[in-house]
Image 1 (cartoon, rainbow, N blue to C red):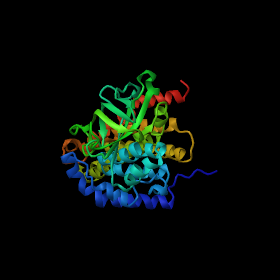
Image 2: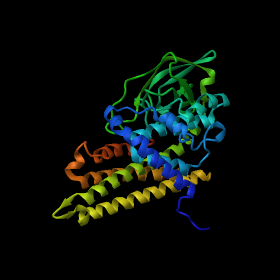
Image 3: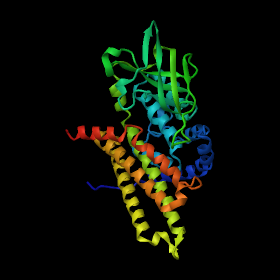
Image 4: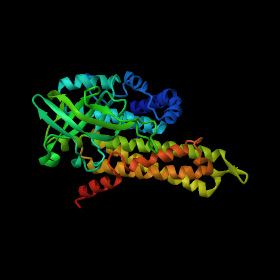
Length: 380
């Protein structure tokens, strides 16, 4: 059977549509979003109207029933236009809505998934805590059953879409004696008494991404807010494998943007009577950057293809996440170097790509965690 590395006509047309949307609707908002560290919320209904929040969801819920490859095309192009904006979109679709689609009751899907796909409501995922990051079993948030309700107490941190979310998918212990097996997952609506959001967290990069803490103090939720009961947490986290792949695609998009910016600059900037792109020191940098990006892209779309075809891809997804996280930092660093002093100026995009790239090896499972996963998959 031949191996085809080309996108289909449908996929190419989809990419062209995304690029056009990004240039016309998102790029004009980026400067202000970065300066004010605010996500432009008007994008959600716009994305919902053209089906971009429901790429991987069934048509019966308002989705367009496409595969992970399409999802990665979207994520890559969003990453190329702005990392923070891409992060908020991914957090809504892959982290908050996908668990509801996978585990939710029909009532929960109608209440959250359908309007979420339409962009009418925004979701977030609350797992990370001040003292629990990569080791999710160390979370301290608890949900105590009292009659027909659960009472949540605890704090979540580094929550994307935190201040603007309409609901949060929240992990909490319902039985601390069972360690990880005693964790359950709830859907908590904004405005529920006892659920509050701290001030916005200020970050090195991804400044247009909305990030905050979620605080639960005697927060009572009904029984039907339970999404995943005890013993199902590990399985629920496995469903987020797809988010790891789309995150890798986003990193490729950031790297591509940094590369294109440096390439264009190198052709325009002259030294000693000729463009600096003609000097071997610069041309070799650009060549190496292009090779790294293409390698990462191939890894991402291989993982996406495996995922879309129902094949085991835990190792490949972690490899794509790890490698794309490493190369986006390398490419962004070299892009800044190509620009020299101008790369250090906030008036040039190179410094933003440099700042945004740094998060890639930390979020969605650190590079160290990915190496653990890969090692285990190798039987080590």
